[in-house]
Image (cartoon, rainbow, N blue to C red; front, side):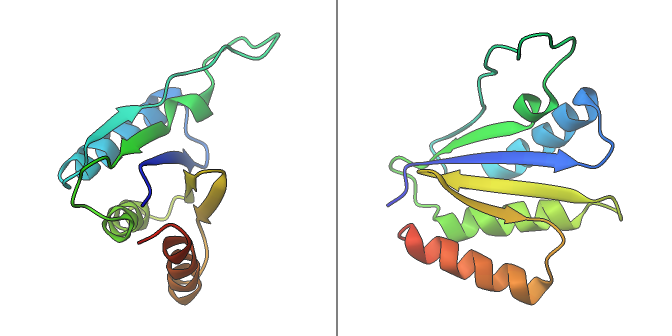
Length: 125
């Protein structure tokens, strides 16, 4: 069974403060599940010549499931619910497990269902 999931969020036109706020909302929702831990991913060193905050690193969460009763399906359900509350703004979420990436964005509900089922089946859900 999967022990750790990395979740990366993005929103078109969002600055680091907005992404930080959105990440906090998603983190709070995930913490309502029976997971071992949900923490912000540590930011790596900035790229050479960078002059600001890396928005991608601000919007990253690490979800630990060690010993938790919550499964991958529950986590994906929470993420999809959060994603659907975008109020017309294009958002995307990437879930990564052992290098395998599921990206949810503007796919139809049916396409998302198919992708989620495939992803979950590969990771013991």
